[in-house]
Length: 482
Image (tube, rainbow, N blue to C red; front, side):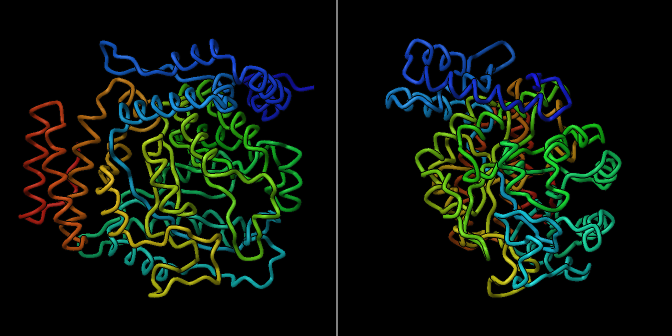
């Protein structure tokens, strides 16, 4: 029997089944233990220190107790602390990005994904480099600066050389004032050497969803194809970091397995990365199973209601205070609006989950990976965020200035992020307003920027940011960053 060891490089030891079962049993037994819950909440609370605001975070076991807790007043306190943490480390900024689907050819048999090999009626597509350029121009014309590229696993149709060629093409497209400044990559688990090549290509974050940490369920849900290898998939982030990628993004597909199990496994994975590499995940994504071609989410009887989904997000924020959190257009406007304050720091906008979808005037559905619940335009999402009191950010500065991995985390932990990310967000928002926004959005945005400039603590940085904003507005200059 495997023994739990967060420093191990073996999947069954750092994501240990017996440890998760013991954790869930402990959480269930203590879900109304108010003395313990108060102790955990106190540990999670942000504190002022000489270096700025600091947080201890929580272990997977402590966070699981909070997730199990059903005492209304304690749940409210969790939400209150989650909001304090979000504000302390990420402010009211929300980073925007879009997924770009390169190919839906796939050799795997995943039961929850319409790209599975046996689906013979989905339209199979793979973008040529000219089609990639058209997609990028369409995304630039919306105002996007950050993409997450997606592709099915197929060594013949989607080899790494193809992915690298697409990245080179994306970075090379300059159209009017448009430029993609950061390409994150969500592709199948691969080798250390391949991760090294992705790093050399200038990617931002390497993202790989675990789907489920429950090994037996994982093997059943991935009956055929290379993804069937649970250990190889689960150990991918260690190989990515060994290949020099220091920003990695975790995620599970909530609804495949019981959410409490997934929650514990997700946090154990984050603890493992911290224990082995000295830095946890850069981001955690929280997708839920949604309807798609050939896939009915009702087949999976582990779906979670919106209220529990919100609680999961709040508890993740308490457990890993410095990690970014992502929610996609899988979720509705209403759900996304409710969780922004609880810990979400990145959202997708105007997403199309079909291959070649952005260059089409009408949203195509024949090659979609999943149904998009939030189908608003980017301008509508930007305006909505500002109406809710958030700053839409198109910033990519940290990656391009080398503030990745532990360097980003130290910036976040010492409180300097307000002197860096806040002005960068305002400057990139100004670019968006000048180049792409509707008249109504522009008016609202400039009023917000004037108000938010005053929140930059250092007078010198505040002055430089204000000067750059005026240059963006009037001289055509772009891409200022701290």
